[in-house]
Image (cartoon, rainbow, N blue to C red; front, side, top):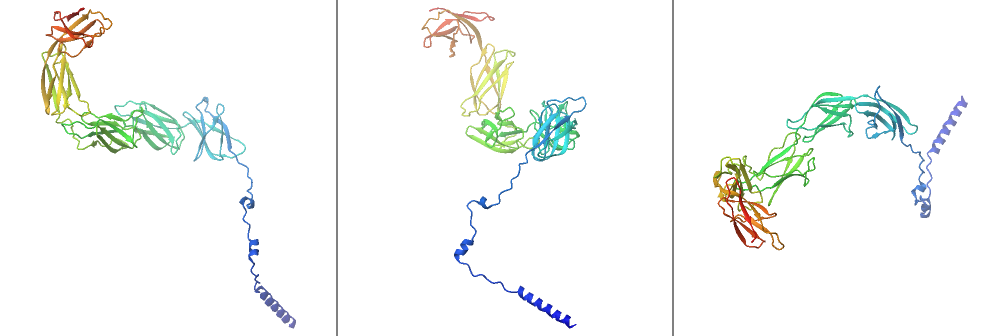
Length: 488
C-alpha cells in the first residue's frame, strides 16, 4: 500500500516537470546588422525563366479524322450533288467526297452531327465523338427527308418567278430542295424535327421571311406583296410652277439603287407629284426633292407590309393640284372636219427651268391642251394637211379658253436646179417668199410647201449671194407646181 502511494507521488512530479518545460519562453536572437540582412535577402533574377519551374512538355493532340460511306436507297445511284457535313453549335465543316458515296473529313476534337444530303434525300448520324489519333469509320444511310409544303399567292397584276431559300434557324447555310409550281411550293430533303427560316423572293415582289417552321409541315399560306411605294406631292400655287424637278430615295446621303442597279429617282410631274418604288429590305429612307434653288428632305419609315402614308413637301398640298388651271381648246378653220391637224403651245417670258412646251393633235379640226397656267401668255402654232396657220399669242384665264385659228392653204412645189455645181460657186438654197427657212440643195431636186397664193420661189447662190425669184408654173389641183431654176 505504501509502495502504491509512493509511485503515485513520483508520477505527479514527472507531469509537473514536463508542463514547465513546454511553457519555457523562446530565446530571442540578437538583431542582425545591415550586412547580414543584405546577404539574407533573396536575389532578383534578370531572367524569370531561370528561376521558374520549367513547363512540362505536352504532345500536340492534332485533329480528328472521320471517313465513311453514304448508303443510298435501292435503285438510287450516287451523283455529284452529294454533300456531307459535320456540324456542332459553333462550326459546320464540309467533307471531301473521295469516290461515289465515300467521304473523308478532318476536324477538331468534339461531338458532331453528321448530315448527308442529295436533293430530296437526307441522312443524319447524331452525337459522333471525334478524337485525335486513329480514323473513325461512319456509315450514313440516305432516305427521303422531311418536307415543308404550302401555297404561295402573288398580287393579281404581277407575274414573277418565286425563289425560295430555307436555312436552319440560327444558321445561314441553305438546306433542302425547293420547288414552286402552279401556286404551290414544297421544300424537300429537310431534317425532321429541325426548325427552318424560309425566305420567299421574286422580281417586283417584297421579300417575305417565315421563321421557326418545324419540318415536316403542310398547309402553309404565303401571300407576297408588291414593293412599297413612296408617294407624295410638293405644294405650289395654281398660277405658279412646281419648284421641284426631281425626287430621289437616299440612305446615308447616297441614292438607293434597285435590283437592276438603277438609281431610285424620278422627274416630278407637272402637277408636282411623284411616286417611287422602295428597294427590298430597306426599313428607312430619306426623300430628297431638288429644283432650281430648292432642296427638300423628309425621312420615311417603310412598314413591313403596305405603303407609307402619302407625303406633302412644302405644304399645303392641294388634293387636286390641277384645279384652277387653264385649258386651251383650239379649232383650225378653213379645213375639212376630218382632215386633222396639230398644234404646239409654248409659254413666253418664263424664268422657270421646267418644260413649257405642250402639244395636241386630232384627226378632226379640234384639239385641247390642259393644265396650263392662268395668267400666262402662250404662243400657238398650228398646221394641218396642206395648211399652215400664223402664230398667235394668247393670255389664258382659269378654265376653258377657246381659240379659232385660220388655215393658210399650202401648195406643194417641186423644182430642179440646172446650175452646174462649179468650184467656188457655193451652196444653192431655196425658200418660199417671206419664209426665212433656207433649204440647202443637196441634189438637183427639191420640194417646198408655200402658201397657195405664192407665184414665185426664191433662190440664193452662195451663203452671201443675192436672193432671186423664179416663177412657179401653174398646176392642177391634184398635181404639184413646178419650178425650173436655169443657169444665169
